[in-house]
Length: 81
Image (cartoon, rainbow, N blue to C red; front, top):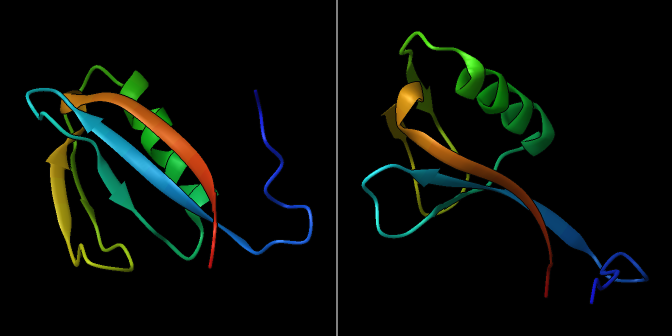
């Protein structure tokens, strides 16, 4: 069942990155998560490896990976307490 979190509740969006060879997903917060999601989605389609370096907000200060190692990508909306 899909829940609508935006009904009177503050929400934030996170980019969740699944990398090949990594057991757990990486959750990253950005000022503009839709733009980062779109950029990473385009890089997933490219057969040429590209070194990607991101500086998310939160506990992860800097993230660096090769675009061909992206196994999956999710844009998640979650409630803020």
